[in-house]
Length: 144
Image (cartoon, rainbow, N blue to C red):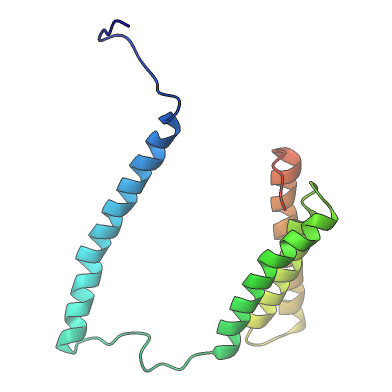
């Protein structure tokens, strides 16, 4: 095949990797810039004694930390289980997301008043429902 400056040849076996490769390099560059301009000066200040590491010496809220890990794990496991009960409908995503958002809101709510609980419940129903309507019904994207 003859090559000219105005001809274009596309390798379809690897063309889909073009933009992800660019994004990976941009993200790597941004990460390196963050390390150089933020992390290195921070650790230098820690070494001089001007700052302390934020994790060391602070108390940990074990209930919220481990509760979050349990809820996230349960969220992904139950989404598949409930999704298999209603295949190709997205109800697994919808029902499990509603419960997940409500329980996460309750766990992180410091003072529970009736108004806050009702607001959390409304948010837990509305947000996943809108996402489900947009993805499953508008764009026909299958959800678990």
